[in-house]
Length: 92
Image 1 (cartoon, rainbow, N blue to C red):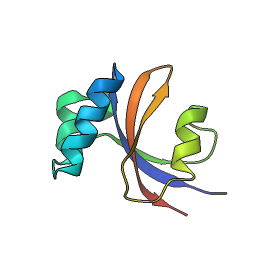
Image 2: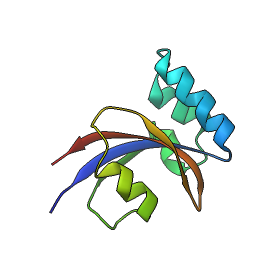
Image 3: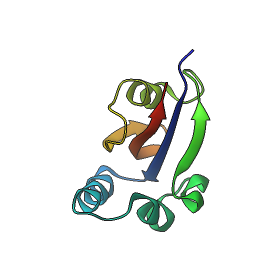
Image 4: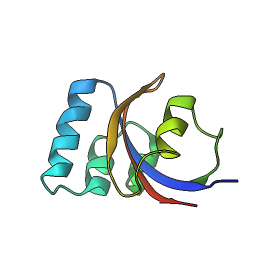
């Protein structure tokens, strides 16, 4: 079974998500932005979610994590929790 590791930043609205993605593309540190802006408890760890398999996260999240290129920031991804920027850090 596939396994992946990912990190994310969770915010309330799409505009904030897009602004953070722009900052990352301009060289800002993903982990620092997660610590400053993410409303998920994982923000304290730079957005790190650890390792998980398919079906352990919400469907919208799974779809991106198990198909997107590794080490490339994806998003905004809308879930019932808000808007996410996702980065797959490893996948097998």
